[in-house]
Image 1 (cartoon, one colour):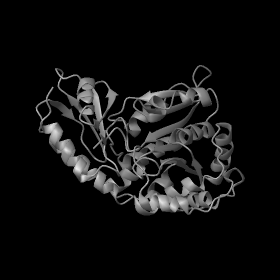
Image 2 (cartoon, rainbow, N blue to C red):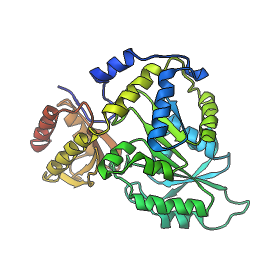
Image 3 (cartoon, rainbow, N blue to C red):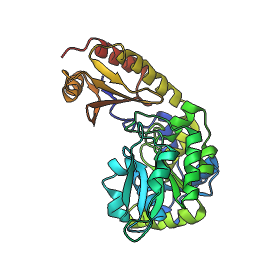
Image 4 (cartoon, rainbow, N blue to C red):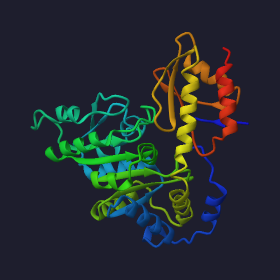
Length: 341
């Protein structure tokens, strides 16, 4: 039995999802004539109370499109030093949009309105880039699935308004935050200019992300998606999987969170574990003691068919998901408790 915990992107479509995919009505999405894609986009926009949405093949492309539609070459965006748009999107902000990133030294991937206000202040002359955009990631990947405080997000919005900054949410795992904190999509739709949602993480779809915004934003994004090579044809088969995920896989995220808390409890009881980041959703990040190299630990677990991932700086990540069963949890707990170097 292989237990793959490197990410929540490793899931396979459920039986019900496969049936929905195989019975999907499709058309040519390049001409806006794929009915399943159109239904998905309308459903997502309505869910968040936003004007329009666009289906993308990946979360990176959705985020990079958002950055491009909000900025011009030579501009600057603000994000946390651990933000996905800076660390894990191939330098796309610089390559695709010609913008620089002003990194904020937040806590677990989250900064405060006060920190943003300080970062956005100062000289505004020909020597410095125009400040255009603020990017938030919720939940934070490198921060261990941490959830932003919504009141702080509202304060950050005010800083954006005061400084003429657009506000983008990288909501790759936003539904994990919504479930964990009992928040609603429309709360976020009212706050942000654009939002990206990944469908292939906790929601369990095989491919795809959604970008939400105004009709004007999405019309521009439609052109940028084409420029980036993201135009797709009979993609309704994948849109049908996403619709199924919206209808069936949101509330069940609480199960992933519970399993993550169970793992956190075990890790905190182990002598060879130095630290465990507080667990809020489906990501567990922990550190082993210095005498036990993190990569060696990961290799040892892999020999037991348990796959974990390194996050740098000695961090080890576990991500619970749709395909992680109770039986697998029992096996993982056993191997953690009786681990030998």
